[in-house]
Length: 66
Image (cartoon, rainbow, N blue to C red; front, side, top):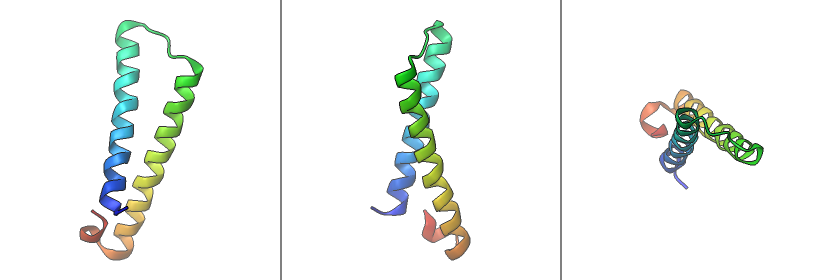
């Protein structure tokens, strides 16, 4: 899968987590531990992808990383 598709998925995952946490906070709804675990995995995977993209940009220049 091309790096730009990975970046798109990373952004999607991070936005999903942000939206879910914002909704829970706005409605004072508790987030179950299972959902927190899933969100933690999405954050970790998203950050890993974005870190890889940043390192690829450092090695080859920003145009080939996107």
